[in-house]
Image 1 (cartoon, rainbow, N blue to C red):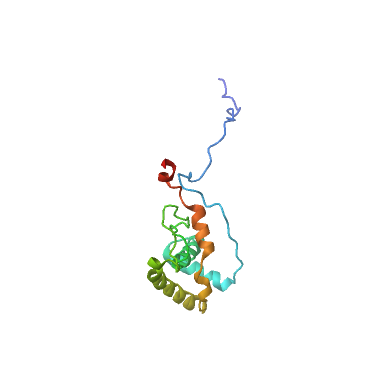
Image 2: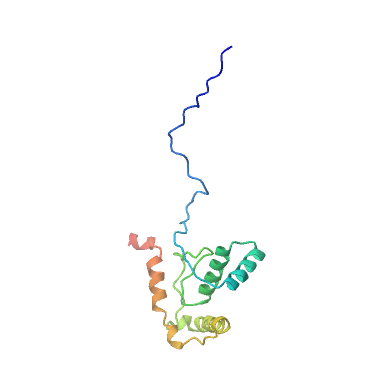
Length: 148
């Protein structure tokens, strides 16, 4: 009777596929934010994230996105925080056709700041030039402009 060989089978040298969920057409979240917070704050954040069935990180990301969406000077962003390149320019207080809509949105934003931070938003903040520059940098190129 012959015994089977005790040698291991040859190990393949082919590269293994990467683990985890593959990225589709979306851009990956490639930036990290680190914060130092008090343990009591972390306990509260964890409790609120748990009751929503989310991770702590996703809960905090949603808070940031909700606050940034409340500012009428900011460009439109989606649920992941990406700037919508196809969206129109942010509202402006200096454009007469948008002044009333901007005023209503600014009043809501001021109220959010007063509730969250106890801060009365200064009128100088209305000129959100930086937000318009960010929107312009992310804006999708106009396909009709190339045909002209």
